[in-house]
Image (tube, rainbow, N blue to C red):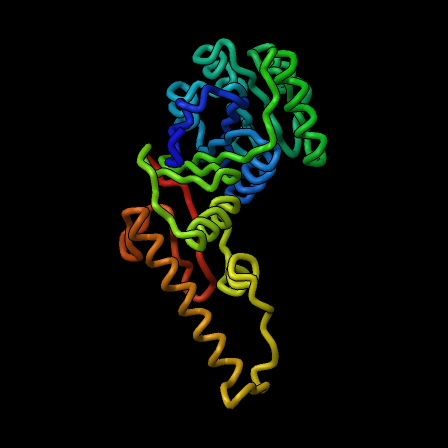
Length: 261
């Protein structure tokens, strides 16, 4: 088999595909990380309309409506998903819910409604239970992410963009994977240096080593991050002036978002 990344559809569905629909970027990122860590190929969308389109095209095994998107119009969205995906599971998780809304959503075709604050382990257990009831095979221990046209197989260290392989250096892959697992979250350069480059945390700027200030070293390290981000942007066919995935938050850090449309 070729070492190039392959489209999700070509994976033979060795693991259930989960689609997360959530307006809140932090919720999307957290669910994406934990589902992918459990071996589920996972896609994310930020609104119901885009989620319905993605569900129809991608035919996921489970759709998870999370957070504010699953509030007043939950029943309508569940009914549309059920009509489009007769064989897929549909779950809802919200911070609060009244009994009539829960009953209406279940009657419309939802398989389960989880009211937070349930722990992530509890939520994942409910995901497994719903998939078992649907007769869906549980995932092998590998992590696959799909963010719009970007696909990452973290275990095999393969990536593709719009179904074409991405030729990434090991560091570029590590950088992209770290950001992809935190989709919608701003990540600082200090965090990237610590987690991707494995450099020690900042020390007192007054400390000097061999005549070079720590501040000077930090500036050089920041430049290393900037250079790798620039290389990665080029391979993702974008630029700082016209970003698609990688967005600079001036004075703070970098955020990976799923492009709209």
